[in-house]
Length: 155
Length: 268
Image 1 (cartoon, each protein chain N blue to C red):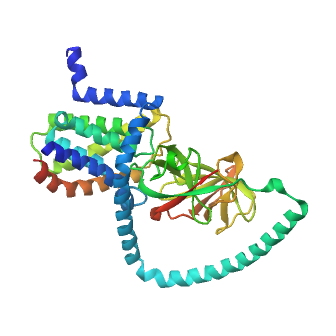
Image 2: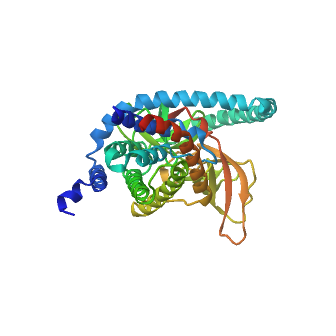
Image 3: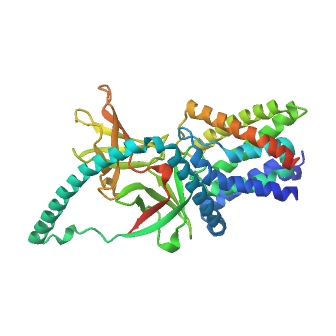
Protein backbone atom coordinates (compact mmCIF):
# COMPACT_ATOMS: atom_id res chain seq x y z
CA UNK A 1 0.00 0.00 0.00
CA UNK A 2 2.84 2.38 0.89
CA UNK A 3 4.59 1.57 -2.38
CA UNK A 4 1.50 2.63 -4.32
CA UNK A 5 1.32 5.82 -2.28
CA UNK A 6 4.99 6.59 -2.97
CA UNK A 7 4.61 5.88 -6.68
CA UNK A 8 1.51 8.07 -6.82
CA UNK A 9 3.29 10.89 -4.96
CA UNK A 10 6.27 10.71 -7.32
CA UNK A 11 4.14 10.74 -10.47
CA UNK A 12 1.99 13.54 -9.06
CA UNK A 13 5.15 15.56 -8.37
CA UNK A 14 6.13 15.08 -12.04
CA UNK A 15 2.81 16.60 -13.13
CA UNK A 16 3.19 19.45 -10.63
CA UNK A 17 6.74 20.11 -11.83
CA UNK A 18 5.47 20.85 -15.35
CA UNK A 19 2.17 22.56 -14.45
CA UNK A 20 2.39 24.31 -11.05
CA UNK A 21 6.10 24.96 -10.58
CA UNK A 22 6.59 27.19 -13.69
CA UNK A 23 4.22 29.70 -12.07
CA UNK A 24 6.34 30.08 -8.94
CA UNK A 25 9.58 30.97 -10.73
CA UNK A 26 11.83 33.57 -9.09
CA UNK A 27 14.18 35.36 -11.55
CA UNK A 28 13.18 32.65 -14.03
CA UNK A 29 14.40 29.88 -11.71
CA UNK A 30 12.10 27.12 -10.48
CA UNK A 31 12.61 24.64 -7.62
CA UNK A 32 13.07 20.97 -8.44
CA UNK A 33 10.11 19.34 -6.73
CA UNK A 34 10.84 15.86 -8.09
CA UNK A 35 14.49 15.98 -6.98
CA UNK A 36 13.49 17.11 -3.47
CA UNK A 37 10.84 14.40 -3.12
CA UNK A 38 13.21 11.69 -4.40
CA UNK A 39 15.94 12.78 -1.96
CA UNK A 40 13.57 12.83 1.01
CA UNK A 41 12.25 9.37 0.09
CA UNK A 42 15.79 8.04 -0.40
CA UNK A 43 16.78 9.30 3.05
CA UNK A 44 13.82 7.54 4.71
CA UNK A 45 13.42 4.48 2.51
CA UNK A 46 16.85 3.63 0.97
CA UNK A 47 17.56 3.47 -2.77
CA UNK A 48 17.22 -0.31 -3.22
CA UNK A 49 13.67 -0.31 -1.78
CA UNK A 50 12.21 2.33 -4.07
CA UNK A 51 14.56 2.36 -7.10
CA UNK A 52 11.94 1.20 -9.61
CA UNK A 53 9.47 3.88 -8.48
CA UNK A 54 12.16 6.54 -8.76
CA UNK A 55 13.08 5.19 -12.20
CA UNK A 56 9.46 5.39 -13.43
CA UNK A 57 9.06 8.96 -12.21
CA UNK A 58 12.36 10.24 -13.66
CA UNK A 59 11.59 8.66 -17.03
CA UNK A 60 8.17 10.36 -16.99
CA UNK A 61 9.85 13.67 -16.19
CA UNK A 62 12.27 13.12 -19.07
CA UNK A 63 9.39 12.60 -21.50
CA UNK A 64 7.95 15.99 -20.51
CA UNK A 65 11.23 17.83 -20.77
CA UNK A 66 12.75 19.82 -23.61
CA UNK A 67 16.16 18.28 -22.93
CA UNK A 68 17.39 15.22 -24.87
CA UNK A 69 15.77 12.02 -23.60
CA UNK A 70 17.73 10.36 -20.79
CA UNK A 71 19.62 13.42 -19.57
CA UNK A 72 17.35 14.11 -16.58
CA UNK A 73 16.85 10.39 -15.79
CA UNK A 74 20.57 9.68 -15.65
CA UNK A 75 21.29 12.79 -13.57
CA UNK A 76 18.52 12.08 -11.06
CA UNK A 77 19.35 8.37 -10.67
CA UNK A 78 23.06 9.13 -10.14
CA UNK A 79 22.15 11.84 -7.59
CA UNK A 80 19.71 9.56 -5.74
CA UNK A 81 22.24 6.72 -5.51
CA UNK A 82 25.15 8.92 -4.39
CA UNK A 83 23.05 10.65 -1.72
CA UNK A 84 21.85 7.25 -0.46
CA UNK A 85 25.46 6.03 -0.18
CA UNK A 86 26.60 9.27 1.47
CA UNK A 87 23.74 9.20 3.97
CA UNK A 88 24.24 5.53 4.83
CA UNK A 89 28.00 5.82 5.32
CA UNK A 90 28.00 9.14 7.17
CA UNK A 91 24.90 9.52 9.30
CA UNK A 92 23.37 7.03 11.70
CA UNK A 93 20.10 8.84 12.42
CA UNK A 94 17.81 11.21 10.57
CA UNK A 95 17.65 14.78 11.83
CA UNK A 96 16.37 17.94 10.21
CA UNK A 97 19.84 19.45 9.66
CA UNK A 98 20.99 16.20 8.05
CA UNK A 99 18.09 16.39 5.61
CA UNK A 100 18.99 20.00 4.82
CA UNK A 101 22.65 19.18 4.18
CA UNK A 102 21.68 16.19 2.02
CA UNK A 103 19.29 18.35 -0.03
CA UNK A 104 22.07 20.90 -0.62
CA UNK A 105 24.52 18.10 -1.56
CA UNK A 106 21.88 16.46 -3.78
CA UNK A 107 21.13 19.72 -5.60
CA UNK A 108 24.86 20.22 -6.24
CA UNK A 109 25.42 16.64 -7.42
CA UNK A 110 22.39 16.91 -9.72
CA UNK A 111 23.73 20.15 -11.17
CA UNK A 112 27.22 18.69 -11.73
CA UNK A 113 25.72 15.53 -13.32
CA UNK A 114 23.60 17.66 -15.63
CA UNK A 115 26.65 19.74 -16.55
CA UNK A 116 28.81 16.68 -17.37
CA UNK A 117 26.04 14.87 -19.24
CA UNK A 118 25.10 18.03 -21.17
CA UNK A 119 28.64 18.05 -22.53
CA UNK A 120 28.40 14.36 -23.45
CA UNK A 121 25.00 14.95 -25.12
CA UNK A 122 26.54 18.07 -26.76
CA UNK A 123 23.87 20.55 -25.69
CA UNK A 124 24.42 24.13 -24.56
CA UNK A 125 24.63 24.59 -20.79
CA UNK A 126 24.46 28.14 -19.47
CA UNK A 127 26.12 28.21 -16.04
CA UNK A 128 25.11 30.89 -13.55
CA UNK A 129 26.07 30.81 -9.88
CA UNK A 130 23.20 33.18 -9.06
CA UNK A 131 20.60 30.84 -10.54
CA UNK A 132 22.20 27.79 -8.92
CA UNK A 133 22.03 29.46 -5.49
CA UNK A 134 18.39 30.47 -6.01
CA UNK A 135 17.52 26.90 -6.98
CA UNK A 136 19.26 25.45 -3.91
CA UNK A 137 17.52 27.91 -1.57
CA UNK A 138 14.21 27.18 -3.27
CA UNK A 139 14.79 23.42 -2.92
CA UNK A 140 15.54 23.89 0.79
CA UNK A 141 12.27 25.78 1.31
CA UNK A 142 10.33 23.03 -0.48
CA UNK A 143 12.11 20.27 1.47
CA UNK A 144 11.34 21.99 4.78
CA UNK A 145 7.65 21.91 3.84
CA UNK A 146 7.87 18.28 2.69
CA UNK A 147 9.89 17.06 5.66
CA UNK A 148 7.07 16.95 8.19
CA UNK A 149 4.50 15.59 5.74
CA UNK A 150 6.79 12.92 4.33
CA UNK A 151 7.78 11.78 7.81
CA UNK A 152 4.15 11.21 8.76
CA UNK A 153 3.05 9.60 5.49
CA UNK A 154 5.95 7.41 4.47
CA UNK A 155 7.45 6.31 7.81
CA UNK B 1 31.19 -9.33 -6.81
CA UNK B 2 29.91 -12.02 -9.22
CA UNK B 3 28.74 -10.82 -12.68
CA UNK B 4 25.10 -11.78 -12.01
CA UNK B 5 25.04 -9.70 -8.83
CA UNK B 6 26.46 -6.65 -10.61
CA UNK B 7 23.67 -6.67 -13.19
CA UNK B 8 20.95 -7.12 -10.56
CA UNK B 9 22.23 -4.24 -8.42
CA UNK B 10 19.44 -1.60 -8.44
CA UNK B 11 21.75 1.25 -9.45
CA UNK B 12 23.46 -0.65 -12.29
CA UNK B 13 20.08 -2.02 -13.41
CA UNK B 14 18.59 1.51 -13.46
CA UNK B 15 21.52 2.82 -15.52
CA UNK B 16 21.25 -0.10 -17.95
CA UNK B 17 17.51 0.47 -18.40
CA UNK B 18 17.98 4.21 -19.04
CA UNK B 19 20.87 3.70 -21.46
CA UNK B 20 18.88 1.03 -23.35
CA UNK B 21 15.91 3.39 -23.57
CA UNK B 22 18.17 6.20 -24.88
CA UNK B 23 19.41 3.85 -27.62
CA UNK B 24 15.84 2.74 -28.45
CA UNK B 25 14.76 6.38 -28.52
CA UNK B 26 17.55 7.29 -30.95
CA UNK B 27 16.25 4.57 -33.29
CA UNK B 28 12.68 5.88 -32.93
CA UNK B 29 11.50 2.62 -31.36
CA UNK B 30 10.15 4.42 -28.29
CA UNK B 31 7.61 6.47 -30.23
CA UNK B 32 4.65 4.05 -29.77
CA UNK B 33 5.35 3.97 -26.01
CA UNK B 34 5.62 7.78 -25.92
CA UNK B 35 2.30 8.13 -27.77
CA UNK B 36 0.58 5.90 -25.20
CA UNK B 37 2.22 7.83 -22.33
CA UNK B 38 1.19 11.20 -23.73
CA UNK B 39 -2.37 10.08 -24.44
CA UNK B 40 -2.67 9.13 -20.77
CA UNK B 41 -0.89 12.09 -19.24
CA UNK B 42 -2.01 14.98 -21.47
CA UNK B 43 -5.61 15.23 -20.12
CA UNK B 44 -4.30 15.32 -16.52
CA UNK B 45 -1.58 17.79 -17.45
CA UNK B 46 -4.06 20.02 -19.27
CA UNK B 47 -6.48 20.06 -16.34
CA UNK B 48 -3.72 20.72 -13.81
CA UNK B 49 -2.09 23.45 -15.93
CA UNK B 50 -5.41 25.23 -16.51
CA UNK B 51 -6.25 25.19 -12.79
CA UNK B 52 -2.85 26.61 -11.76
CA UNK B 53 -2.92 29.07 -14.66
CA UNK B 54 -6.27 30.47 -13.46
CA UNK B 55 -5.09 30.66 -9.84
CA UNK B 56 -1.92 32.45 -10.97
CA UNK B 57 -3.96 34.83 -13.15
CA UNK B 58 -6.23 35.67 -10.22
CA UNK B 59 -3.29 36.24 -7.84
CA UNK B 60 -1.53 38.43 -10.42
CA UNK B 61 -4.70 40.46 -10.78
CA UNK B 62 -5.05 40.93 -7.02
CA UNK B 63 -1.43 41.98 -6.62
CA UNK B 64 -1.62 44.45 -9.52
CA UNK B 65 -4.79 46.29 -8.44
CA UNK B 66 -2.76 49.29 -7.18
CA UNK B 67 -0.98 49.80 -10.48
CA UNK B 68 -4.05 49.25 -12.67
CA UNK B 69 -5.06 52.92 -12.84
CA UNK B 70 -1.68 54.11 -14.10
CA UNK B 71 -1.47 51.15 -16.47
CA UNK B 72 -4.90 52.06 -17.84
CA UNK B 73 -3.80 55.66 -18.55
CA UNK B 74 -0.64 54.40 -20.29
CA UNK B 75 -2.62 51.92 -22.38
CA UNK B 76 -5.10 54.60 -23.46
CA UNK B 77 -2.23 56.80 -24.63
CA UNK B 78 -0.60 53.88 -26.44
CA UNK B 79 -3.98 53.01 -28.00
CA UNK B 80 -4.29 56.53 -29.47
CA UNK B 81 -0.82 56.29 -31.03
CA UNK B 82 -1.57 52.83 -32.41
CA UNK B 83 -4.90 53.99 -33.87
CA UNK B 84 -3.04 56.71 -35.74
CA UNK B 85 -0.57 54.16 -37.08
CA UNK B 86 -3.42 51.80 -38.05
CA UNK B 87 -5.17 54.44 -40.15
CA UNK B 88 -1.89 55.19 -41.92
CA UNK B 89 -1.24 51.47 -42.52
CA UNK B 90 -4.75 50.90 -43.92
CA UNK B 91 -4.20 53.69 -46.40
CA UNK B 92 -0.86 52.21 -47.40
CA UNK B 93 -2.43 48.74 -47.76
CA UNK B 94 -5.09 50.14 -50.13
CA UNK B 95 -2.41 51.86 -52.15
CA UNK B 96 -0.37 48.65 -52.19
CA UNK B 97 -3.36 46.61 -53.42
CA UNK B 98 -3.98 49.13 -56.18
CA UNK B 99 -0.35 48.96 -57.37
CA UNK B 100 -0.36 45.14 -57.23
CA UNK B 101 -3.47 45.04 -59.43
CA UNK B 102 -1.91 47.48 -61.87
CA UNK B 103 1.27 45.46 -62.34
CA UNK B 104 -0.48 42.04 -61.90
CA UNK B 105 1.92 40.82 -59.21
CA UNK B 106 0.60 37.26 -58.88
CA UNK B 107 3.89 35.83 -57.68
CA UNK B 108 3.89 37.98 -54.58
CA UNK B 109 0.94 36.18 -53.04
CA UNK B 110 1.76 34.63 -49.68
CA UNK B 111 1.48 30.83 -49.41
CA UNK B 112 -1.83 29.66 -47.97
CA UNK B 113 -1.50 29.29 -44.21
CA UNK B 114 -3.69 27.45 -41.73
CA UNK B 115 -3.78 28.23 -38.06
CA UNK B 116 -4.32 25.48 -35.50
CA UNK B 117 -5.33 26.52 -32.00
CA UNK B 118 -3.67 24.57 -29.18
CA UNK B 119 -3.81 24.70 -25.39
CA UNK B 120 -0.63 24.84 -23.33
CA UNK B 121 -0.64 21.80 -21.05
CA UNK B 122 2.73 22.20 -19.36
CA UNK B 123 6.18 23.70 -19.39
CA UNK B 124 9.67 22.32 -19.33
CA UNK B 125 10.68 21.02 -15.92
CA UNK B 126 14.31 22.11 -15.87
CA UNK B 127 15.92 25.50 -15.47
CA UNK B 128 17.99 24.86 -18.60
CA UNK B 129 15.25 25.04 -21.19
CA UNK B 130 12.13 27.07 -21.97
CA UNK B 131 9.81 24.63 -23.72
CA UNK B 132 6.03 24.52 -23.78
CA UNK B 133 3.93 21.40 -24.12
CA UNK B 134 0.71 21.52 -26.17
CA UNK B 135 -2.28 19.23 -26.66
CA UNK B 136 -2.07 19.00 -30.46
CA UNK B 137 0.11 16.74 -32.58
CA UNK B 138 0.49 14.76 -35.81
CA UNK B 139 -3.19 13.86 -36.06
CA UNK B 140 -4.07 17.58 -36.07
CA UNK B 141 -1.66 18.27 -38.93
CA UNK B 142 1.24 19.66 -36.92
CA UNK B 143 4.75 19.01 -38.19
CA UNK B 144 8.25 19.53 -36.82
CA UNK B 145 9.47 23.03 -37.62
CA UNK B 146 6.01 24.65 -37.69
CA UNK B 147 6.02 28.20 -36.36
CA UNK B 148 4.04 29.05 -33.21
CA UNK B 149 2.43 32.45 -32.65
CA UNK B 150 -0.23 34.11 -30.56
CA UNK B 151 -2.89 36.39 -32.00
CA UNK B 152 -1.79 39.33 -34.15
CA UNK B 153 1.30 37.57 -35.49
CA UNK B 154 3.41 37.65 -32.36
CA UNK B 155 6.14 35.00 -32.38
CA UNK B 156 6.25 32.40 -29.60
CA UNK B 157 8.60 29.75 -30.99
CA UNK B 158 8.85 26.65 -33.10
CA UNK B 159 7.68 23.02 -32.90
CA UNK B 160 10.65 20.76 -32.16
CA UNK B 161 9.01 17.40 -31.39
CA UNK B 162 5.66 16.01 -32.54
CA UNK B 163 3.74 12.97 -31.37
CA UNK B 164 0.20 11.75 -32.13
CA UNK B 165 -1.64 14.10 -29.78
CA UNK B 166 1.15 16.12 -28.21
CA UNK B 167 3.97 18.46 -29.26
CA UNK B 168 6.86 20.38 -27.74
CA UNK B 169 7.52 24.04 -28.56
CA UNK B 170 10.95 25.60 -28.21
CA UNK B 171 10.15 29.17 -27.21
CA UNK B 172 12.25 32.07 -28.45
CA UNK B 173 13.38 32.73 -24.85
CA UNK B 174 15.08 29.31 -24.73
CA UNK B 175 18.86 29.76 -24.46
CA UNK B 176 19.43 27.56 -27.54
CA UNK B 177 16.90 29.41 -29.71
CA UNK B 178 18.16 31.56 -32.61
CA UNK B 179 15.91 33.77 -34.74
CA UNK B 180 16.97 36.01 -37.62
CA UNK B 181 15.40 39.40 -36.95
CA UNK B 182 15.43 43.01 -38.01
CA UNK B 183 14.64 46.33 -36.42
CA UNK B 184 11.50 47.40 -38.24
CA UNK B 185 12.16 51.18 -38.38
CA UNK B 186 15.71 50.95 -39.69
CA UNK B 187 15.83 47.51 -41.37
CA UNK B 188 18.99 46.60 -39.43
CA UNK B 189 19.47 42.83 -39.28
CA UNK B 190 20.49 40.93 -36.17
CA UNK B 191 20.20 37.60 -34.38
CA UNK B 192 17.79 37.01 -31.49
CA UNK B 193 18.92 34.76 -28.64
CA UNK B 194 17.05 33.63 -25.54
CA UNK B 195 18.15 34.65 -22.05
CA UNK B 196 17.20 33.76 -18.49
CA UNK B 197 14.29 35.60 -16.80
CA UNK B 198 12.11 35.57 -19.94
CA UNK B 199 14.25 38.08 -21.81
CA UNK B 200 15.83 38.24 -25.24
CA UNK B 201 18.91 39.82 -26.71
CA UNK B 202 19.54 40.89 -30.27
CA UNK B 203 23.15 40.36 -31.31
CA UNK B 204 25.23 40.99 -34.45
CA UNK B 205 23.86 44.51 -35.00
CA UNK B 206 26.44 46.42 -37.09
CA UNK B 207 28.54 49.05 -35.30
CA UNK B 208 27.78 52.63 -36.25
CA UNK B 209 24.06 52.05 -36.82
CA UNK B 210 21.75 54.11 -34.62
CA UNK B 211 19.48 51.98 -32.47
CA UNK B 212 16.93 53.45 -30.09
CA UNK B 213 14.91 52.15 -27.19
CA UNK B 214 11.32 51.29 -28.04
CA UNK B 215 12.01 50.27 -31.65
CA UNK B 216 10.10 47.19 -32.80
CA UNK B 217 11.93 43.97 -33.66
CA UNK B 218 10.38 41.53 -36.14
CA UNK B 219 11.47 38.34 -37.87
CA UNK B 220 13.52 38.98 -41.00
CA UNK B 221 12.63 35.75 -42.79
CA UNK B 222 16.31 35.01 -43.46
CA UNK B 223 17.27 31.31 -43.33
CA UNK B 224 13.62 30.46 -43.95
CA UNK B 225 12.77 29.04 -40.53
CA UNK B 226 10.35 31.85 -39.63
CA UNK B 227 8.20 33.92 -42.02
CA UNK B 228 9.08 37.59 -42.32
CA UNK B 229 7.26 40.20 -40.24
CA UNK B 230 6.32 38.34 -37.04
CA UNK B 231 6.58 40.62 -34.01
CA UNK B 232 9.23 39.62 -31.45
CA UNK B 233 9.39 42.59 -29.09
CA UNK B 234 10.71 46.07 -28.38
CA UNK B 235 14.27 47.24 -27.79
CA UNK B 236 14.64 47.78 -24.06
CA UNK B 237 18.30 48.56 -23.46
CA UNK B 238 21.28 49.03 -25.79
CA UNK B 239 24.56 47.46 -24.72
CA UNK B 240 27.01 49.02 -27.13
CA UNK B 241 30.77 48.96 -26.84
CA UNK B 242 33.33 50.26 -29.34
CA UNK B 243 35.67 47.35 -28.69
CA UNK B 244 33.11 44.83 -29.94
CA UNK B 245 32.54 44.06 -33.61
CA UNK B 246 28.77 44.33 -33.26
CA UNK B 247 26.20 45.99 -31.02
CA UNK B 248 23.92 44.11 -28.64
CA UNK B 249 20.53 45.18 -27.31
CA UNK B 250 18.17 43.73 -24.74
CA UNK B 251 14.63 43.12 -25.95
CA UNK B 252 11.39 43.01 -24.03
CA UNK B 253 9.39 40.18 -25.63
CA UNK B 254 5.91 41.02 -26.94
CA UNK B 255 4.66 37.76 -25.46
CA UNK B 256 4.18 37.45 -21.72
CA UNK B 257 5.54 33.91 -21.45
CA UNK B 258 4.28 33.57 -17.88
CA UNK B 259 0.71 34.08 -19.07
CA UNK B 260 0.60 31.82 -22.10
CA UNK B 261 -2.61 29.82 -22.21
CA UNK B 262 -3.26 29.18 -25.90
CA UNK B 263 -1.17 29.43 -29.06
CA UNK B 264 -1.64 29.16 -32.82
CA UNK B 265 0.49 26.88 -34.95
CA UNK B 266 1.04 27.97 -38.54
CA UNK B 267 0.80 25.01 -40.92
CA UNK B 268 1.15 25.36 -44.65
